Image (cartoon, rainbow, N blue to C red):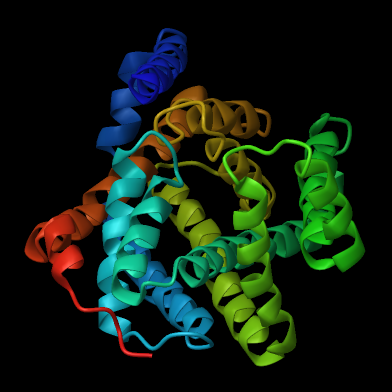
Length: 322
């Protein structure tokens, strides 16, 4: 019942934000912007999604090879299924739960499954933060005096502090002592087990380098993809702004308070891109069209989920040999 109420609230928040945005735009201009989009840009973004899923799957396979051996095609199947659920569950991390479930059923190693998914997400966000930090060096002049530098300080600083707690032993121990006072459903023991597996990656520099390179390719590709789609919509916004704004919108859309980031992401796009000359209709169309293309491509994952028989197939599958 609680999950149902939470989902309804998230749907309500998304609808409320989207209603507010649409009630403050010129609908004729919105439909004109959408109808005049260049087909090439749409096809490019669709192919980009497929390419990014393929690279992300390779990244995941590199992470997992330290502990288990699963074929690339099987992981690609799971990754597309995760993408499908990412777009149709209440948060952007819903697909991670599905991927973790499938991986656990194949390997029977819950700690390895959780650690690999965390490393997959973490490396992607780390690459995004590095790209953002480097982009701020030449791009600070573009946002100086707008109030946006404070957002970047909070985003990059927060990620840096979180990373210190994760990777620096004494800081992690201090954080665990605080959590030890909570005693919430044995969460401390579970975190400790997960952490031991995670720390195993510190000795494997080859893995860390490979997955970071993959993450840079994926994140840079997404940023360029947004820019290409914007050009297809007739927006005249420089690529440098996308390297600054997309990390912010990505972080905002991951907040678990709306349906797959809907509404939050669109509000962020409107706020950021209208501040540098784009129309509200263009910014809103860009965000929604990106989501629609992603949802369309993720249907591949839905088909794959049906093909393998959903949960039944996984539960009947023999665990991978170690």
